[in-house]
Each structure stands twice: as C-alpha cells, then as structure tokens.
Image (cartoon, rainbow, N blue to C red; front, side):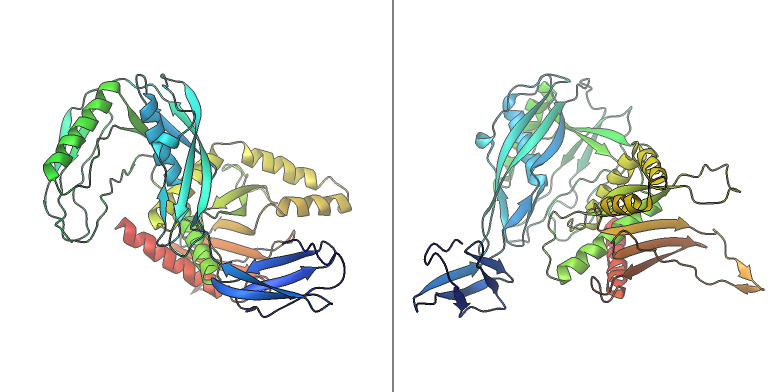
Length: 454
C-alpha cells in the first residue's frame, strides 16, 4: 500500500492485532507492508506527525486453493472431436487443482480456449480457466495450459464383460469388484450401484495396479452419467455416452507404473511425514513440492572391491502437498522412474567431478549454488542383508546421519539392515528444533499407506 500524503516524514501504525497481521511502514519506499499471519479481521490506524490519521480495515483470509499452471494429457480418437478434447482438458486441469477444505473447483468446457478436432498422433495446447471458491476463502483463479496428445490406437472390441452390481445398494466403504485385465483380452467394465436417498455420498474409484516390472499403458473409454435420482435415466445416458465415445475411439491413455520398490515406498512416506510436519507448523502445503538433493551410487556392480566414493547428485521433487498416501506413492514412483531413465545421474556425476578441479573459492561458490536449489539432503544406503556379529554379539541396529554442507540444514537418511529400515533425521536447530517430530510423522505416513494399500 503506497503512502501518497504526507510525502515525507514518519508514519506510525497502531491498533491492529499483531497475532493476525504484521504491519510495517517502509520510509524509503513510502509503503505500508502487510503480512497476514492467520485468518481474521482487524483495523490498522495510520497516523502522521501532524496528528492526522486514517483507519484501514484488514481482512486476512487464505486462498481457496492452488493449482499448477500447466499439465499434460494423452487421449485417443479417430479423430478426437473438439468437444471431447475440451472435456478431457477440463478433467486434467481439475486434477492439478488443490482446494482447501470446504472449497470447490469449477471449470466450464465452454470457457476452454484453443480446443479443436485432433487427429491421431497430433498434439495441441488448450487453456482451461479454473476457479477455486469457498466460504471464508479468497477466490483463486488460474488458467491451466493443458498439452493434449492424441496417441493413435487400434479400435479393438472388448472380449470380456466385467459386471459389478453386488451389493446393489452401497452401505459401507470397501472393495466392490476386482478382476485381471490382460493385453490380449480387453474388457468392458459395467458397474451398477445405488446410493439410497439421504445416504452418505460415496465415491466409486477404479484403481489399476500393474504387477509387472514394466510401465504399462492403459486405454480407458468411459461412459459416465449422473448423479440423478432417476436411475433408469442415468443408465441410459451412461450407455449412450459410452457408445458415442467407443464409435469414435475417444478415450484416455493412462501410464500405470510398475510395482513400486521399497525405496519408492519409504521416500513417499518421507514426503508424507514432511507434509504433516509443515502443516503442523502452519504452512499451506496443498500442491507444494519440495526438492531434495539425493546422492546416487555410480559404482558398477562388478567393482565391489574398489575404494573411494563414486556418486552423483540428482534432484528429486517430493510431493509433500498430496494428501492421499496412494497417490503420493504413485507420484514418487513416476518421479523416480523419470530420473532412472534420464541422463541426470551422469550429468550430476560430471558436475561432482568437475567441482573437485576448481580452485577452492570457486568450488565453494559452485557448491553453494548447487545446494541452493534443494531444501534438504535425502540419502538411501543399503546395508548388510543379514545380521552381522561383532565379537560374537549381534548388531541389533545400524544407521547413519547425513553430513550437512552447502548451507542445507536438514538431512534424512534411509538405511536398510537385516530386513529392517531405519529413517534418521538430522537438522539445524534453527530450522527444525525437534527432528524426532519428522520421524514420527514419517511412521504415521507409512501406516496410512499400509492402510490404503490393504
């Protein structure tokens, strides 16, 4: 807020609740800088040296949510109609929106810009205006750029019909139906379930789990209708939508990651624990990702006897703002697979080696620059697979803590030994006074993931 009059002199601020807002007068820029601390309403009285004053009403409220400004989408269609492209782009944009509790995300296909008919193996970028609103929140608006690719697929009729209709009336949460779908046996899933009037609203989730060691592509052609009390009309509309999309070959392509590794599971639990710790500290984490610097072993498996360190450094983005444990695991899995299939470990190895050739002062500056792009160090070390003994006594537990350097004040270590995994946290007391709070949150995140997976 700019102070126009008086053009000079000191302005004093008083009367406001310091627990709600921090108000500071900047005499150089002649501005009143306000920082909201928590939700609420207060007043700021502005007084100058001549006895003149004015009162400002300040309302502090959080945004209704956040959303990324871009995402990607892979569809099918022969060709994909403009309306279908717009519909799928809206769905994809909503998936990268994170509303606060009680807020809702809205987007209209009629507001989508740039959607047109898309032929096979072509791509286009469309723009989806999003609004996140809710009582007590500041409305949040974002235009999401959705890059849409039409991946041409053969039109293969389903061989199997999978039917889920028991129980017809849903009265509790649980697994309704499961079946295997193979590459050679495409299937159509017909599910019919009814929610009684005034019953608890429930979400039907179709979860695809890939048990192979390789990432799979899943083509989904859907026909969804409702909700509506007229169940016959819902069934009719659902069938009509499916047949229309099937005739045009219009569907979505999903990349289903291979079975997650133990490392993926632990890293996702670390991300969940960090998210819980940040939220407890008052940080808004919806949509937040923090970057960890991760050492990667570059020693060839055959060189077990060589001495010295051979490691690279890569950056891994931890999805601390994803509330669901299963979704968080899948995001970690995708991020890990991306790094494994990229040149980042090799490039990091060359950079690490190059740092050692620089003069000491340049090496220090380069190291600080490199470390400044991350918030913490995360390292995973594989220990002995079987219990070892020292002087005949078994070693019950082994762990290590990260050496902190480059200005990074938090290190998280993952150490596996004799079938057990130990997670350790070391921190600068000025950043995290009680690192045990993070390890406890990691354990709770792991328990949440175990519950969702069971």
